[in-house]
Image 1 (cartoon, one colour):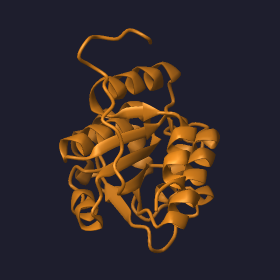
Image 2 (cartoon, helix red, strand yellow):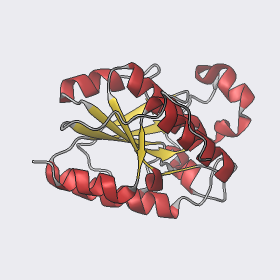
Image 3 (cartoon, helix red, strand yellow):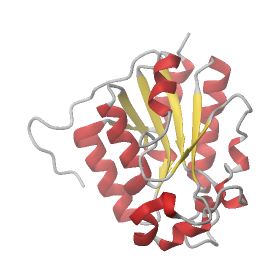
Length: 203
């Protein structure tokens, strides 16, 4: 999708106090055998490489998961619309962060009920306490929780960076369409090497 429009798609750039938000790279989404899942091996591995650099640089990392109480009333109409979400019961293996990302005990896990990592969660206040100016969004899915998180990060006043190799979707068409939309209006969709080099140069 190469169509562009005048006045759209400028770079908002990245600051010098980033945080990596890893959106829903949990077992229920990264196991392709589940109704919710797909093979995100390449995206998980690329994200792990960024996390290793971030950890060495002292860059904060926050993970998110989706988890519901067994009655699912906390999921409202979202669970009605997407009944496959009923896999994600609090305390189940499916809500755990993919072990390939080696989440550290010091890295917060934000539990959410809806698409955006900000909606109904303490993420915004966490980022404020970290002194963050840039949110690097990784995870899945591009057309759902990644896009919603990127939009809300912008609306909370952060620069938004999305490394394209670190996000994925069940649908390649949806993936590309939403990367285009994010780049056009909400954040900078850039290559993995660009973000890797950016992190490596942080003091």
